[in-house]
Image (cartoon, rainbow, N blue to C red; front, side, top):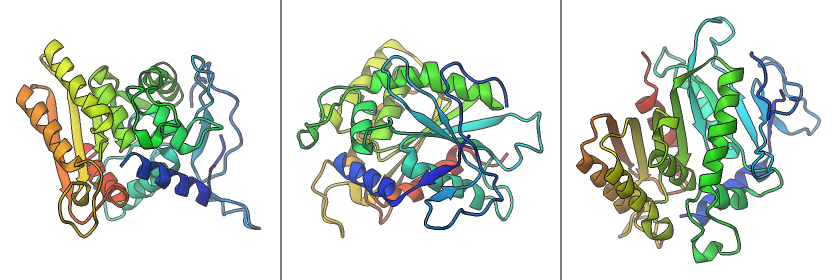
Length: 314
């Protein structure tokens, strides 16, 4: 294991990407981990990069594509003291940005007593050697028909990345950590939420809960709504706990922050209307429009709302 190291460039890259889309035995696919640092260890100093102490980084490559990916892991406070306990797992896309934020939220929300359930946090990294924009444009989108402004990058690798999560990441996490496989949650923002919707409408059983943050429903002429309709034509139930958040200023019309992109608030409303019209007995669906937020500002607040919705204290 090695402690996650963060730099300013990682945050800048992720934000630019967001703008562009408006122990047990090791798993066979995992390389030998690097050394970890204990949660109580101080920072190294001397100009060394800031580290997320107590976190773990594991190499989980994709044999199908030959790409190298990593997963970032944060175990809950009670993990060592309660060796017989199993925990829900929260998987989050765009881990370079989202992992450290959700790690701190999981700690702070319980400072005055249990407000959310303890969980294992797993961050899904970008492919090694790729920028965040290149990796997420390819891995988080369902078709090759990307927007013209991003035509220089490859799109449509979502199904292949979904197969990687199913065959490599989920087995690795379940093998190495004390998980409750019946309680997996996938949290994605923007293109990450588009990937989550793709999984929801093709292999919903991979996760029990889905947190969809500012989903890029507009992608390829709202292709994901066609996927929803195809799912409804084949199935009579959708067993999932779904929470959707969107920023107030992600819609069209006069707002303090001028919006020139698609009306993402209307898109979320269309998705919610479609899902509610199916009357799936196994579906729990909630959504929130968060006032005063746009596509870039809404994520931390949306993460908090998602934790309260999907992992309330028992």
